[in-house]
Length: 309
Ligand code: TUI
Image (tube, rainbow, N blue to C red; front, side):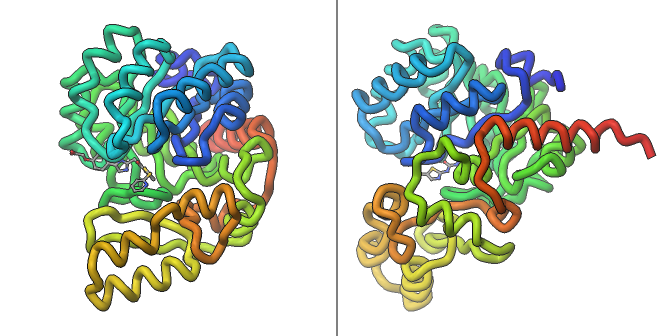
């Protein structure tokens, strides 16, 4: 399937992997790129040396294009932005903010820049600032989310900009990819499906929770603090939500989530870890290699999109 996104990225398929904090490291990114998608390394809150080593390890495993996701709330965002330019990574995606101040630096380094947007206004601003594409991410996604759903955000962003639009949030199979194309997208970003891939090195307890999740097993914490985060329901989210209802202090809320991703990804703490996941977890039922996932998704989408009746 050739789209304006495969043309832009030089990938075989219009599928990019979400820049999942603590999860998206070199083995996952290289596996997705080697399978014909665009693998992404998540810089998250990690320092310069860690991300530089991840970029170099990815380059040892693949000669295909890949990207780095820069989480703009990171205390290291400035130096990671500079690192991306120094290393001339093929693609940068950004999340949780406006990357406007870094745009010139990245474009001068020949990087393709693809910000995540959660609104039409930011999508237009990103196009004016020189973005090569935008990821329109709906609130079905895992992790830090905006307000609009994928179903309403993608067609409105597609109408508002001329650059390729990548749909994200709630997409986990070929039906989701086909539907995204119908909404005006040129490709999709998927996180939750790749969480359970064989090449994804998260703790088995985290994978098992995603594989066993049902349709309504995610909740959103932090709406009251302005940092809404979607996770699988567990003891931490139950306590967090009741603290929010009781109007407990920001410090008490923060204490509950401190180190939550590390607890989930490294320690396999399914009770108190932040098991970030999208709502599509209920559809994700089997562990496969990234190549098996991508081929299955493409086959299903192509069949649906060529249907004439
Ligand atoms: O960034 C994400 N998802 C994430 S980042 C993350 S790591 C983290 N850990 C603890 C606390 C906070 C983050 C986990 N999940 N997705 C991309 C995304 N970006 N979703 C929504 C947005 C967004 C929202 C508002 C982007 C821009 C924006 O507006 C910025 C502005 O200034 O207009």
